[in-house]
Image (tube, rainbow, N blue to C red; front, side, top):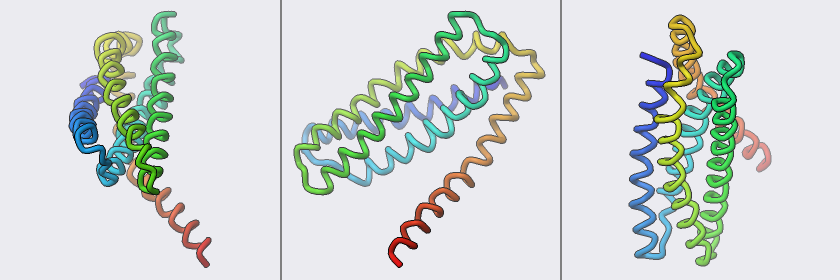
Length: 183
């Protein structure tokens, strides 16, 4: 297995979520109502799985290792584009979270913003995934020896193993801060 095979498997999971987001945007369009539970789950999925887990491996391992190989100008430019796209997804997710809070607080006008940000994410990810799957991932592997690819794959697995512990340690830290502020 190549390291990028794991990343492409993760893309299939993200695509499944995009299908659900498209279904939800259709529901919002029909009902003009937001399901906060769906939005919370979506935000958690995007932040934890798509961004922290998936983009984390890309930026923290693949792109880092590629930068040591002095990639072609085309590939170096693509890395910058992909990072910019990751930043866009993070910002759009924050905007979605803020719009959802506004709806929960009673601002019915913010429903259209929730719809917009969900739709933006649903339009963004398929194009982003296609760029990585069809134009970047396989050519990027040509820079690495089979041993380097195996080491990178192991780095990916190690990254994933630590992720759940980091996520919930952070959750507890935030809950403790809130609890201390109540005292």
